Length: 430
Image (cartoon, rainbow, N blue to C red; front, side, top):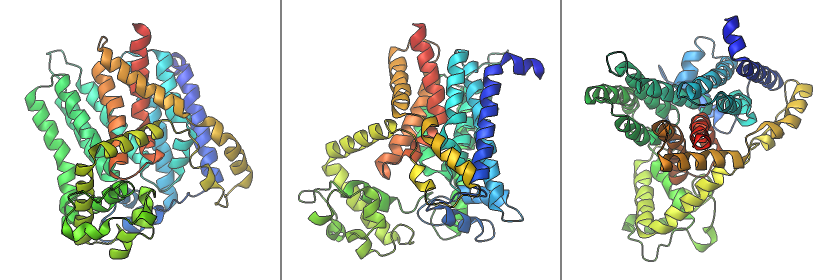
């Protein structure tokens, strides 16, 4: 162990600083920070025989809360587990870059992003699903990359590929946006020429958690989809620019067209605030109303078909905005909390904005990944496709179907850090 620590002294220091930062964060805001959705997750965790279901979010995270807090229902246990998960992601990222053949300096840089980023550390203190989503996505990537290596007989570890698929599916039951990484995962699997038998087994492993979840949710009367209010969210996404004059909108959804007074609102306002949609269907996405979801979805798809360029430009622009967002997005939220330890909290708040990932860095990692894949000259190409491609797909998919939110990128930031590090290794080595 001592020799291992000496060989990776820089990473050991990073891990120690990351541990200290998480201890201070926990002391300052013990036992937990609560976001607007946090109480809903806790309520679902302790509803029903196993877990409760609602139309507007999956119940994978409440199920984890339920399992972690047996039998005491203590929220602090969840927060401790999330901080441990954040610390586990750090070594995974470091080892993943090294295993793929990246330089140690770049592996340290990628690990520093996930171990020291203030937003990631603070999110671990919230009752929110981003940390566990990031953990399962990173573990999935690890097993996928290890599956790309042949054994002594030239075979690839089928079990690793199946584990990667299952972990990706589990991530999707925690944050639905993780499912947007599945096409990228498939491109990677076929790109590295995995045997069809292994792909079939991995496909079954991918479907198993999703089908089991769908069966439980269907039995609870909420249908089989992970999110049964997708029509609401897509409506909010397009309502701000919808031109209803020529759109082929279904007759029963015509009166959902926003009046001029509602033009230009943020997507969340159309579905959570007072709008023509919430006046017609009171209660918004949490209400189990299949008719509302169908009509709102029909309206949204009609707008997208009629205005594909506007929709594509809006999404592209907002995705770019997410990748250029500077860290520190949760700073204002901290002001509304009475901290457990005011002195520690004050010190954390002062340092918070200076230990978050700047927007130029996330954009650099993304553009470097695109450039490295486009050149396709080095050994890391398919690894970058999986890592950075998944990060982009998750972020863009969420922005395209819900709204612009920096937290969607944070869930995939470990993947982007790995992919960007390997891309820079390729570009610097050419």
